[in-house]
Length: 92
Image (cartoon, rainbow, N blue to C red; front, side):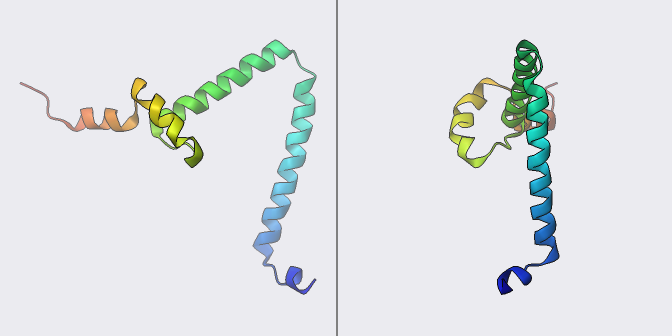
C-alpha cells in the first residue's frame, strides 16, 4: 500500500482516463453491434483504408508493421517522394 500511496497524481489521472476509455469503447461496441452489419462493414473498411494509406504516405506506421509497409510502400505515393519532386529545379 505504501508504494501505491507514492504514485504521482498524473499516474492516477492516466489510469482513470484508460478506464473511462475502456468503458466508452465497450458501450460503443454494444451500440454498433445492433446496427446493420453491411453498413458496419463498409464503415470499418473505409476507416481501415484511410489509416492504411495514411501510414503508407506519411510512413508513421507502428514499428511492428514496418516490414510489411516497406514491401507495400513502393507501389503507392509517399510524402518524401512528393517533397523531393517539389524541391528539384524545373528543366528549361
